Image (cartoon, rainbow, N blue to C red; front, side, top):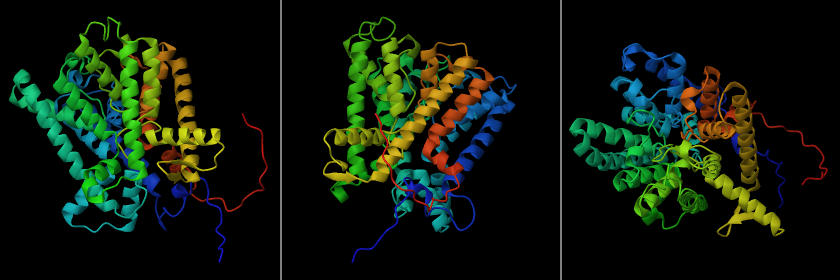
Length: 459
């Protein structure tokens, strides 16, 4: 017998069935939790103990740094090595780790160590934090996230340490190796080489480039994809989500590396001064980092305007859902492209790999993209009023903050206090996602009234 089901709101998965009978919704808890961690981190980084000079750091600058660390961005107004002491640097890397895998995942680790049972409310929070499709198996996913994170960061840290120890000595080499491994996997882009240089000193070093880029790529895949990939021998098939993430990741890296190679081939300030191997390595690395990480081996300010604009597009796309990166996400782009292709062919259904994508997902992709465009446009417009910089540089800065990337055209250290707080807010929105923040600020009560349908002209 046919059973009538009332229509679902567009963002039904985000507004129904997730608010406990009392207390805050998962989205609001995430927003409040990240904000609290940022405030605590900002306070600690402003103390004299955290600064290299012993005089402390301005709270605005400390708060900006804490936001950048928790939101795993990498934009800095004061250099991490030159301004912060060892204590301050350890605070930063802790904030990066907590922000990268999420404070709810860290809380899960504490619960498991204490033998505490994780209730339904906490599972809902974990589902929101991990961007999981279902609450079922979310604790197991959190365990896999923790195990994979520490394992991958450990392997990366050992490899980088072996490269840095002959150059820096045992203690410093180990410290630099693991600091940059954690920062790379979490897609944070913080470095300890001083002078706002990034890792430009290793532009043609294959060990550093390949290790860091692999950590960046894995961190940008999303924890669900990482867990599924590790379990492939057991499950023998990938979900549609994992297939899309891998497909889009490979396509975007190849497209970006190829475009950068040809655009910058004769630029003496970037790839032009390198040999063939150096050109290929630098183009590949710059093709990986714009969507997620913020590490750079060539000066971003010295790139050609066409390359800079191309990087803006990559930063806007960002990483994959459930990862440590920001942006609208790779699967959002894939869903939009599939919808356009289906419309062109006159099809009602949208799909990939002989699977149909639900309309709710397409609506969500459209909503995320529109909100992201509005955010970047608004932030860029405000920056053009308050900051003395080129328009392209300000657009680059705003997109980098939204995508939690961390690349800059040498604008960040010169921002006004208003500009710093605006970029910090943009990083915060970019880390949580505009849709999560919108839901957190909404009433979370779906409308029960449905109006009559009437067509309008578009296009």
